[in-house]
Image (cartoon, rainbow, N blue to C red; front, side, top):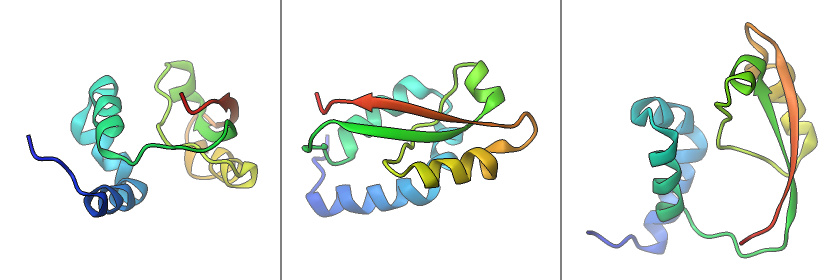
Length: 100
């Protein structure tokens, strides 16, 4: 298997940030996608964080949460009331994570 360089990891991170929803649809298996992201994306080496996500209610109720979270509550609120609020409405999620 090809080992990724740090530059390739950064390039994929940028692509994931812009097109993660398309990648998720194409792979269509969140467990496999999670494994892939854990292998390809750069590891986080900072302190624990309080993270937020603006999620669609239908996806939340079906347990299909998205992968992208932010430390900025205002950004998550924007998604909870905008892009991810279509159809069933949106919800603001919050979690505390540790790097391990």
